[in-house]
Length: 133
Image (cartoon, rainbow, N blue to C red; front, side, top):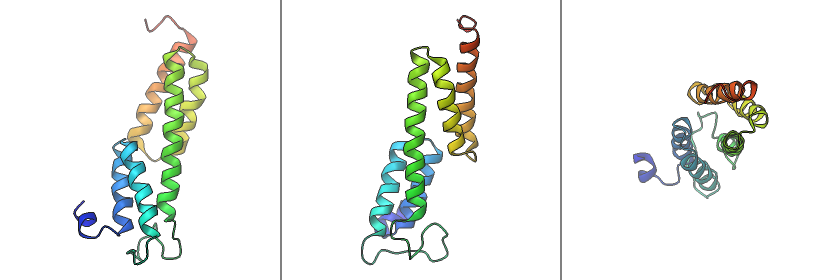
């Protein structure tokens, strides 16, 4: 946050902060910071870090932020839809949505453990609806 205050045109700072919010499952703030990163990277005089693989001088749309922004949006959409299906007891419709959400970011162990638990519960309830009551 101090880097953003010191240099509000540093797109990499917004990107790293967006990653932190994403990993803590604060998707709303992650989306805001990824969008700000992409916006800042288009400004004249925006500061880039040439050693950073995610923030290239030749890529004004900031490749890392753009990809992560799409992943977070898809993840939000899939998990919301899956949880809505679970709420109305449509477990067979929720299972593939949870599976797709898990496949979006296989390296995020914390998120995937939660999604796997929710998918397991939906699977259990779909096989024997009265077992969990």
